[in-house]
Each structure stands twice: as C-alpha cells, then as structure tokens.
Image 1 (cartoon, helix red, strand yellow):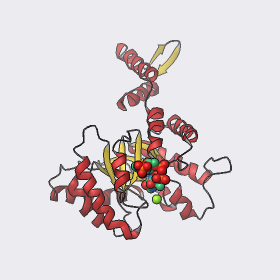
Image 2 (tube, helix red, strand yellow):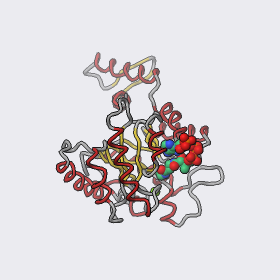
Image 3 (cartoon, rainbow, N blue to C red):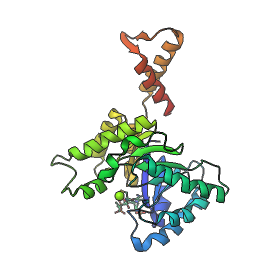
Length: 287
Ligand code: COA
Ligand code: MG
C-alpha cells in the first residue's frame, strides 16, 4: 500500500469523498482530528460508514485510528467499530511492541465476540509521537502477527519536546525529527513490516510533497500518509515501482535462477550479488 489518507471520523462529507480518492488505505480518525465533545458522534458516524463502505467493490483498505492507550477511550472506540469489521486499526502514540501487543489482545476478544476471522484485523502503529516512544522503536519485532507497518510523525513529537518548530527556514525537518524518521526505518526493517512516511501538512504544495515522497522512497519507505485527497495521486505515482524497475528486478531474479550455485552474476556490465537479489524480491512483493 502506497497511500494512507486520513479522514476525520466525524465528517460524513469527507468520509463520502474519501472512497473515490484513489488512496490505497483510509485512516478513519477517532483521535486528534476529532474534538473530545465529538468522540461518540465520530464513533457512530465511522461505524455506519464502515458498514456501508465494506461492500463497495475496488474500495480502499479501511483502517480506524483509535485513541491512544493512555486515554481510557480505546474500549469505547473498539466497541463501536469492531462489529463492522475494519481491515485494520491505527494505534497513535504507540510505545514499541508492548502497546501493539496490548491493542492486539483487546482486538482478539472483539474478533471472537463478533465472529470475525481470528487475526483478520491488522495494526499500523505510529511510533514516534513522544520522546519515550523513540527509545522503543527497536522493540516492534515479534510484537504481533497483526503488525502491518510503522509510521512516524513530527507534530506530536515537537509538542512533547517543547520545540518551537520541526522544520528549518528551508522547510527541511530539523535533527530530532530526522532521527525519528531514521529510527522508524530501522525499526520497521527490523520488525519486517512497512515503513510509512509522515504527512506533508502544506497540502496545496504538491511539488514539495513530490520531493518529500521521492526522498522517502529513496531511503526505503514504501508509503506515505496524506491529509487531503489532492495528495493521493502524487503519493501513488511516486511509490509505485516503474516498469523499468520491475523489468530490472525480474532480470536479476532470472539471472540468479539460471545460476543457482552463484553468489554473484553480471548484468549489463554491472556486478549483481545477494543484496541486489533481496532488493529485487522485495520490490516485486510490493506489486
Ligand atoms: N478526506 C476526504 N475528503 C477531504 C479531505 C480528507 N482528508 N480533506 C478535504 N476533503 C474534501 C473537502 O470536504 C472538500 O470537499 P467538498 O468541496 O465537496 O466539501 C474537498 O475535499 C476539497 O477540500 P478543501 O476545501 O481543499 O480543504 P478543506 O479546507 O475542506 O480541508 C483540511 C482542509 C486540512 C481541514 C482537511 O483536508 C482535513 O480534514 N484533513 C484531514 C485532517 C486529519 O485527519 N488530521 C489528522 C492526522 S494529521
Ligand atoms: Mg497526532
């Protein structure tokens, strides 16, 4: 999945629009984009939307962002939405694998209660929203077979750090956020799940978004979160492997299949060894 679009869970209008946005996944939000006074209405609106949207053919994956585990709101969130069988949940302010395991246990009970397939509900964790969570980024491995990916975010982290801003005068993330970004890549690779890049909040600036997508992809992210439907096409285009890349990956795999006893082969005058093979296999798995 290349694009994950946030949709405030209390906005019927945006929920309706999001279905035709072209996003690979929607994040129906019960957390930060919903005011405390609107939480129950958002749960009801989101559950109704899920029941309706599930049957739509060619629909995006439907994830619900619940509130964080320290709020005491997660039980009510799950009671409202799990019966409608979302494809997954997004866990904000996750502190490593322990929080993922905790949510997984709560989810397993509801899957049994609502006769859903055991393990069907995936979890995507946002793993960098507090200073504490940064130190737990290496602890996602083996937390739960439900874990689909780890995303990073710089907005809540800057609030936790008491920073004045998270980007410098050129618009580039400053060191604390670059560290969070890098550790997310490492944490996701070590847990063998997708690394998902943060939102680009200047939603009218599509060329700035495209640049950030290219940099993310270059470094190993396979997807980016979006806040506005206009961002989806740029994200999908950048993260989709090009026909040339697919052809090159197939050529590498073919070359190794023809030489099963070799650790290294030559293609078009270039040395190709096992790391290249792994990269090629990984790229084809994304198709
Ligand atoms: N999902 C679905 N539809 C959306 C949308 C979203 N995230 N953001 C905007 N739209 C819709 C609008 O409703 C509008 O449709 P309409 O003209 O039929 O009403 C259309 O797209 C164009 O929107 P636009 O006027 O350009 O933006 P806006 O001022 O209405 O909204 C935001 C701007 C930032 C408030 C809005 O994009 C938003 O709510 N984003 C999600 C925020 C969020 O969830 N944050 C939490 C994670 S960081
Ligand atoms: Mg937040």
